Each structure stands twice: as structure tokens, then as C-alpha cells.
Length: 175
Length: 176
Image (cartoon, rainbow over all chains, first blue to last red; front, side):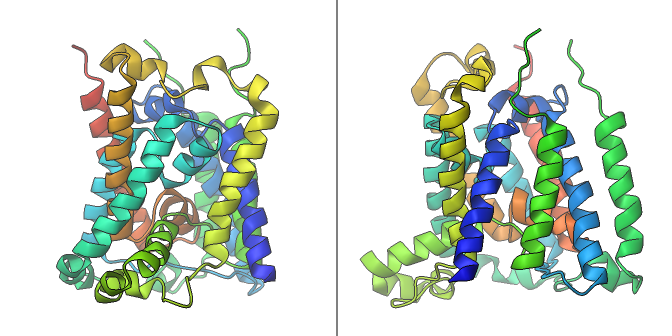
């Protein structure tokens, strides 16, 4: 029960941050994908920069509840490609279409609805993809597992690099 | 120039990174796309139990008695509630061009038809969740949570997704 309440509260904060940070904004999403308005990529790089450091600091104290997704290269690449087309066409991703719906955007509601259809279609098509998912599947591995080096040694430089890119590297380019 | 945002990407990015850290400390990282299947599975078990049981992927995510509603599902419900409440409070502060269901950029390129915009949004949604379920995650689960955990597969997802999304956006918005 506590877990459910924590999930709900974290979700509330997640939704609030995405709304306040402009992540449901079509001009921001497409602006980033057209490499003109870097808002979204800067937001994401900052989040990952802080998150990587946070997660691996927790990991140092054995306090991180990690959930690493299996690395089945071909299935992820094909899924990511289909996802990428959907992202550019709708201007939303699964999380931001939820928040866009909550703020009353009708196009977000259509993406939300389409999402249930897409998930259902994949459920039905799943048997055809099983072999693709089984191929080149390295399991739930991280850079730490691959190299045998403690994750914090990757996390600190990567975090610094991402924050530097977000704060100093990326510039908006309007014609 | 008037401020064209509510909170800056810096504040939002740092807050999101801290929220991810908190979630990882308390339960597990953030994720959204799985819950579309969990919901589909719950509904399918209710309205078409035979279909649900004979579809392995749906059977995996829910049962007749146990709908599989857990932390992740409550998180997405929270996004709807938290996003909605925040939007209601900050409506006046939201930049004019971010309001409504017809983005100006879209209208300039594809015309004023709301039907066309909705059709694209729906089609995009189908592709998003088909792709996310095949890949095993989406922007939150793979990119933000996954890369933060230095997960190998999530780096692949991030690179491919961005590359294809950028190419698609460039094609959609090529000059005509």
C-alpha cells in the first residue's frame, strides 16, 4: 500500500515537472528534433546528468533499487526507430501525452488513445518478435557489468559531460 | 521579450534528476510505457478473457483476479492528477503558443485542420507504444532512467530514437 502511495506521489511530481518545464510543448519537442530550439535536449541532458550521479551515489551505499532493462540490441533498435517516427509525428512521448491530456490538449488525448491501440497491436504481434528479442540479447547489463569497473567512475565524468553540454555546449539556432 | 516558459529547463532538469534519484532510493526508477499494456491487459481480462489468456503478452501483464495495478500504474495515474492540478494552477503563466490543441508550427506547415492534427497525433501514439513495447521502454524508462543507470540497451535506444526522430522531423518540415 505504501508503495502505491509513493508511486502516486512521485507520479504527481513527475507530471508537474513535465508540465512546468514545457515538456508537453509541441514547439519545444519539434524545435529540438529540428535542432533549432534545444530546450528539451538540454532538459533531458540535465535530468540524466543529475540522475546518473544520484543513482550511482545511492549505489555506493547499496541503496539503489535499480531496474535495468535487458539489452537485446536488434529489438531495441527496431523498436527505437518506430518510436522515433511516432515521436516526431505526434510531438509527444508516452509520458508527455499523459500530461498533455491532463492539461486538456485534445491532440495529446489522441496520442494517449493511440498508445493503447499500439500497445494492444504489439501484444498481438509479440510472437512474431520473440526471435528478434532473443537475438543478440545480452541481458540486464550496465557499463559496470561490461567493464567490471565501479559505476561511479563512469557516472561522475558522464554526469559532468552531460551538464556541461546542457549548460554551455548546446545553443539554440534560429534562422 | 516576455518570458516564454514557466520554469526553465535547468530547474525542470535538476528537479527531474532528483525525482529519479528519490524514486530509485524508495522503490524503482521512473517508467511509463509498460502501463499502457497493464491497462490493456486489465481491460482485456475484463471484456474478453479468452482473448487475453490466449495472448501471451497480455497474459503476462494481468490476470483475471489480479489486474497488475502497482507502483508503476499509480505513477502514471499520479502524472494525470499532478499534471492536471499544476496546469489548472499555472494556466495563466503558460506561454500563449504552448496552449491549445493546434500548435502554430503544425498549422503553418500542415494547415488548420484539427482532424488532420488529431489523426497524426493518434497515428504517432500507435507507433510510440508499439515501438516502446518492442524496445522495452520509452523516454522515461529507457532514456532518462535507463541511461542514468548506465544500462547498455538504453544507450542504444537513446541513440536510435533521436537519430530517427530527427530525420523524421526534418522530412516533415522540409521547405516546400
